[in-house]
Image (cartoon, rainbow, N blue to C red; front, side, top):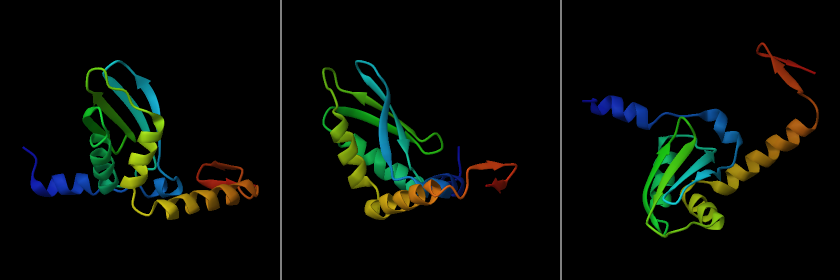
Length: 128
């Protein structure tokens, strides 16, 4: 049995590098009753929990499980149910805190990288 403190530490894990990406959902595999998703931009346990709740609330979804570390989710659909990509995007937009700020950060990073200041990172050093 896991202690409450250990569960809290696992739940509060943070992936700060993912702040550079605005959250996006992409279907990686779909069967008749299961859909696997790649969820880019999940930063912390709160993000994962809110995303899981938003995905569970979609019509036709019986179960949703979000893996923060892998940046993925698995949905189990009701028999005969289907999902549209727009519904997934809307669910994620409602779940993410400060989505406009995250999109602005992503745009700023793209512009900064596009200047050509940093082309590669090798051995922990930036080369120009």
